[in-house]
Length: 371
Image (cartoon, rainbow, N blue to C red):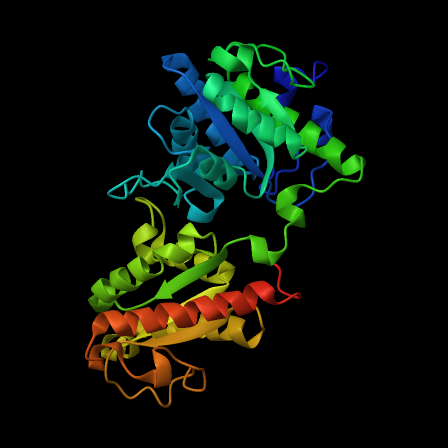
């Protein structure tokens, strides 16, 4: 890494798939998204500002990011920078310890609540990760670093950020110090990640995110619903929260669209990436032109092509016998509308069980790979 100057890295164009120009002295990176875990901590404002810039650089370079969601972590600063340039929730994962009362966590990316134990949090943080970056940090980060090295992951400690990052003895190739306030500091870290991962591939290795089978990766779930049914969607989301905590899915709905984003374009993009599409069928849903002409049409096209699974969830009494999805197995059991059950909780529990079964089928299918 010492041969790569910050000036050359700054001049190198960055493609969305993470490939750097060979003019920067780096080999083109394959078109895949490698997840990076960022750990550490610091109370120094310049370190937090650097972490935010690093998050932005990782987003620009096509990486995915996992970070602890605790307030004492520089991970939150990096997550804020990452989220600013890339609000797609599945590319940003914040791991929170599950405490009594169930903290919701910050409204950035996908919040994963692990068990209260440090080992459980560490396991979720490193799940599907291809490299680890240390910024500052105390002795409490040693367990994450040792676990990463035991898994054969590249570990990059950022010098000048203080704490464990300046003293960690097991980093194979330390980074050349740069002023943290310079744009080149964040770019140097991203460039070093490309170098280390490219070397792993050259040795015949494969980044974990690329090698992991679908059974180990959360599937993307898209909620298609009419706004009049937003309360029903929220209740279903609570029933499916356990599946998110288990790492089986990441849910998305139009309430996740960030301020200033083009809502129609964002919805179409999320539909194109979804593994599972839930159609919350009601009289409002069927009457909605946008639901019918955009969301249902695109979802059914991907279902027919074997690219996604469409599951109708019948909310209320309505004639849906001639809808494009009428031939599909619906939930709850027997297609009985949720609002006709004597116990709504039992109805939603039946829906959640059906969705779990569908996810198990998709994750077990050998031919299905996460897109």
